[in-house]
Length: 106
Image 1 (cartoon, rainbow, N blue to C red):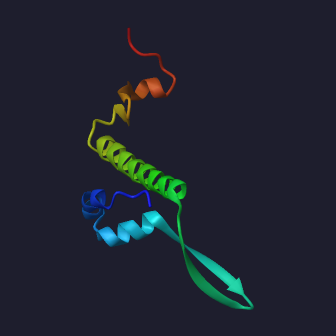
Image 2: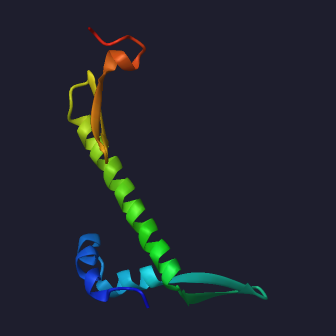
Image 3: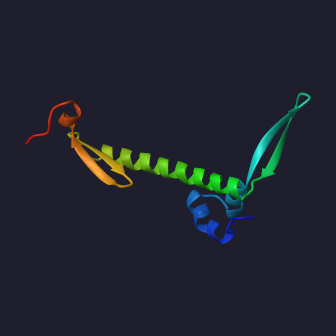
């Protein structure tokens, strides 16, 4: 298995779940199997590549939600005349009148 179990403690704490729950979600998935009108849940263990992709997808989803939250908070707490966009490479701001096609003052 390619998971470092000692590294799960702090992320699990931040997510508000147990280390075991995080481990299970990162290293397995549940499949629904339908056979003859019955549905059965089957837990499948992921290989290293699949577990890595799952970890990366979780990280991307968390980053996206955090980014959206921060942009919302910044936009809600700044003057209306400015639009603030935060970006992982830095940030930029643009005057509201520039957004509506008016050139910036010189």
